[in-house]
Image (cartoon, rainbow, N blue to C red; front, top):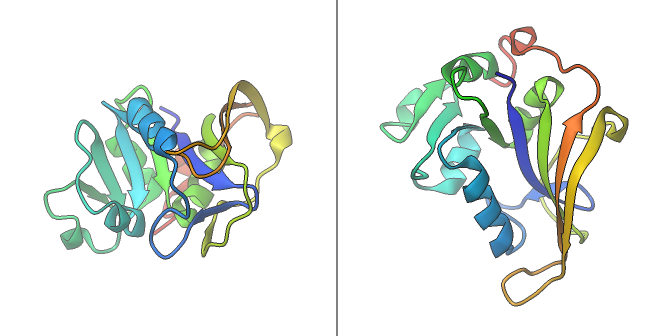
Length: 175
């Protein structure tokens, strides 16, 4: 199993601010739920804490050095490789953040579900730089801002055109 990444990011690669999302995009939250329902979602501890509750219908796998903080809300893993082993029987698992986990997982990812927020926003967490030459856009839908979506945005699905690295190459990554 090769993980997929799912992320919403602004034009300037911002993905978070003060422990939350720096925008209000109802359609993105709905898409996130539809795509991840029934699957493993892999995240770092800070992302887990920012969510603040279990996400029904999904298996939460949290990469952390503090497994006691996860309690009964998910499965604690010590590394990205360990988290991927937990999810290995799932035909598609999703890495959902934060920045360190995205950075560690990006080289081993085959598919990227991207919500491109067409705005420059301030934030304190950014998505890592990546070469667009390594990816082919297979789907795109553009949407205007409206009463429930603060900024114009696009839903994209990108598939890697180069061979992803295997998760075993990342033992100990994102601890």
